[in-house]
Image (tube, rainbow, N blue to C red; front, side, top):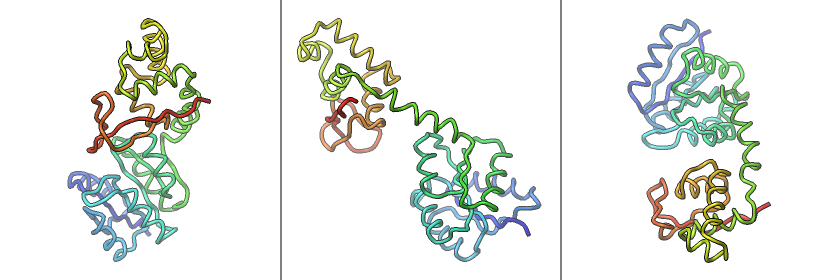
Length: 235
């Protein structure tokens, strides 16, 4: 019996590409195509596929949330998350959601097909091409993020919007030393400027966002304005 596949993707071209690809596979049959989360819920319930591919970004919702719904209702359903967001945090969220496979839309065709076939026979087993590398990067984060007391203080002052001269005056050091501390902080975080340093610190949970006016005129990537005002206690 062929694998009964449902496709959930808000992009017409992506659905078309997957349909054309699957039409060349004698062991895969498309039983539903949905362009939204709402339509997918009804289509999956109606057609009862073996595997469903879900885009992370849908017009009316989050693909990860939809995948979680599918998993909660059917432990045997194979779920393949297709995404253009290849960041490590998206991969780990997919793993925690309970999907069967995580595949980048830029992946080779054979990888997409392998993920679908894997999901059909091992729905509860997670696979992702970049998982080993992502895990290695995650293990390396605590070492990179272990700031010295001076670096933690510099980060706190940068998040408060202080200039290099103001940082020097606050820490009772020369401006040259303050510049050195800032440069060392940037190197530790793998960044080249203040805005990148603050965003990296947020991602590493060294500082946190709070609603309010932005520090040093910096605007966060999301729509709201934020202030960054807490530095984690260094190890």
